[in-house]
Image: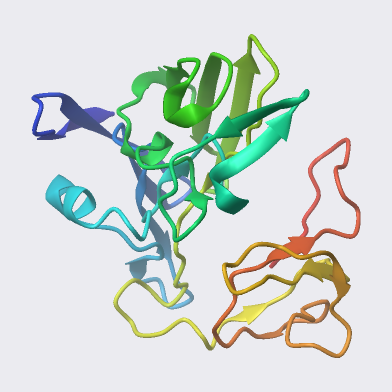
Length: 249
């Protein structure tokens, strides 16, 4: 089910889809592919929204920096110096995070309006990123599908097709608080990750290599409280697998 959610300053309408299944309700915006809310039942039966978001469109327009719930692209995370080499060519990107390019540039996928199509138990968002958008080479056709399964699990599937060599790194940027949005800091959450290695970073948060998690605060191979101060990649033990496997809890 979709509804009108708001209008951008240039007159472009923004829609919101509501998915309900398995006792879970999820709201998705056409602006930025944003996961606005994920309402789930708790142990006591009360329902709470476990991701951070804004009630109105203006909240996202006036506060783009946190990327709350947004679809990130063409390239999630930082590209050092806003430059990369591919097939012997150097590409310069807009820098929007100190000396680096972050999350697709000054106007990444999080600030674009996507075309929505209903699918079974969900919605599919799509758009074409033209060659040269934010400095990236190649025309990139992207589809992102949000679905709820019978148990209420939210699944996000990404697909991108290019007509030329390029770089792509898509993700969702939701902030989770399993006690419910507005309930306080999430630092007391317990986390487990099947990763014996991680990527240390320099002062600009650019990875400098790969290191072992053993003996460091990055060791989540057994569940423990997260604390705070993490902005790092974890190297999954099994890497890419033929079928989906649980890697974090």
